[in-house]
Image 1 (cartoon, rainbow, N blue to C red):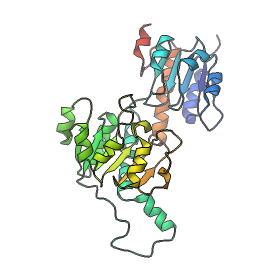
Image 2: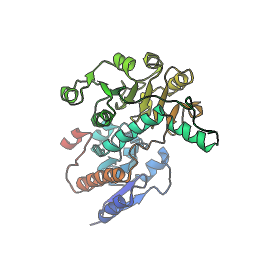
Image 3: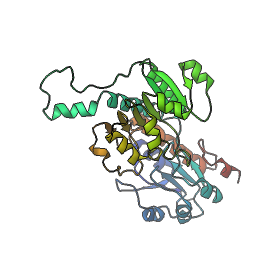
Image 4: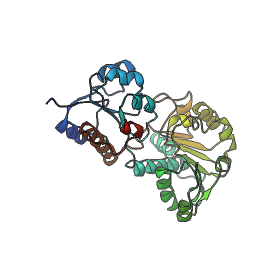
Length: 326
């Protein structure tokens, strides 16, 4: 019996690739870039399974190009806004993601961004490297205090709660906004549940952990930025389009807020005009999960889901569970 065929849209850690090759015939995108839509449609033809990235739009057109033998698309990410759940369910294709294993790495990076913006770390590093440092000064590159300040968390999922644990080490006051209240979290962290407007007005540091949904697109725009303190810092490690990037550039230029730390962008990998010219923003290339342990753990979930589905078993992390009843 011929082995099943799996296509991987971008090279995974070698350990994950070895595990795949033990079980299947595997082909991987040889380019160090994302595939175009036309390339993706061509490369998924005839595959039994596809391991995709968040940058790969898997819609009905791509699924039809793959063919009716396609059983699973395993997304190498927690988010799955790149997947058309309805189209996949209609065609009997199982979709999966990689939740749970990114929480520590993403929360750590979010707090690292918070500290980097508050204490102007990239700016001060460049200042020294450029030979501008002439000695200690009481007014040189003054930043913001973090200890005992108010941390606002928008979206209290696993990552938001993980970040709160780290923030308590700095004696930060925790406030949060979410679609539902979490009394246990409040008791554990002394946190306060607030509405969005209060979150914006009271946060010294506002960190975003909401999923990208129609109602969260531009969750932060010009109106919201004007509500924030002039000394506030905005951190986004969730999804780029939850922030109106052009409005953020304007707010940063006009000092409506102190600064921002961004790991995700509205139109990745492009940046909004003028963003990279600003000293009061720290910008990273979408690396929240970029630790070796995390990336391998993500791959383990994706590979295990493919093995299970092609072996006739349900996967562990299906995001369109209705398909399992078809």
